[in-house]
Image (cartoon, rainbow, N blue to C red; front, side):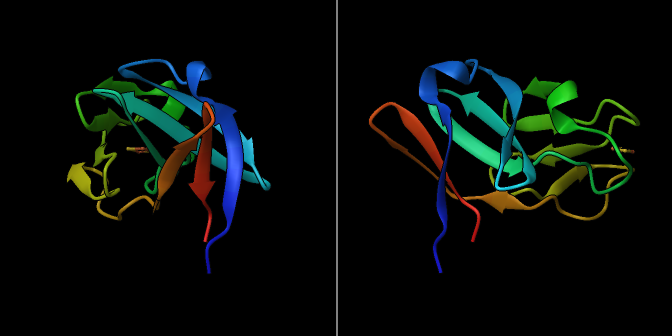
Length: 103
Ligand code: FES
């Protein structure tokens, strides 16, 4: 089932960058790349680090703790030491708001 949650104003998601939001008790990372918004869980699957404190390079987010990387489009790991995907969430924009489907 869909569970669309209004998580942010679109204008609050920095372009070509990442920010963290709380939604429904979950920590979510929001990314804006080339005018598209993407969402993943904000906690790295390798250790307890927040991806919003990391470095976004194109479609890759680099974890601030051990520099593992994920593809923000689907959450798959792209650089060690991360091996587990991070959960990614569907995003839609309506009326200037960002909605994330928490499922
Ligand atoms: Fe993210 Fe280790 S905690 S790479």
